Amino acid sequence: MTSYRPYTPNDYQFLREMLFEAVFWSRTDANRPSLEEGLSYDYTKHILERFGTCFSPRDLTLPCSLSLSMPR
Image (cartoon, rainbow, N blue to C red; front, side, top):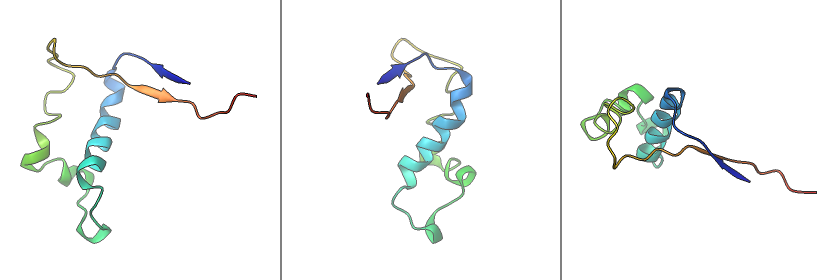
């Protein structure tokens, strides 16, 4: 079952972590920056720079959760 809910400011840290994973998923541990360093690079820092403070009609944030329990 999938459930959806509106974005809340509590989701921000999760979005940061997911952005980091999306950008650096293929790097080995030796070549992987820390979360803070990776999100400070010019090609990543602008993505979440003002996220949650200035929504426009084009913005969409739709957190969802997936329940993997099997029906009986």
